[in-house]
Length: 124
Image 1 (cartoon, rainbow, N blue to C red):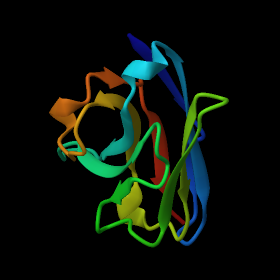
Image 2: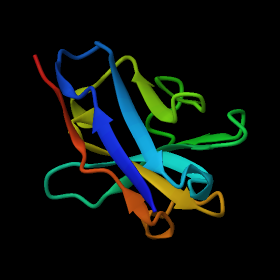
Image 3: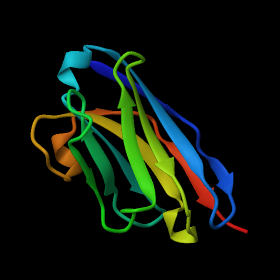
């Protein structure tokens, strides 16, 4: 089992930045691939970014965030991060940390472990 706890959400103006953190505990070796998803009100949960726990160079980004967001992890701290720059109102959503996918896919059903989510609101 892997336990995930997110932090770092909040209210930010358009064009601003936020850094989300996700602390992992438990059987970290089961994490394999970790990622961020988000869900806006009335919409389905969507993929944002992912990284391999053992190979930080293996990353993937949704087209909507490519060039603005950066995913990283700190294996020593067993933490996952999402640096979000150039935020837009359409980035407003609850952001979830996920882990455990054994293949590099974007579908949420392949991630068995989830955090409770952190709210990000982009508004002036």
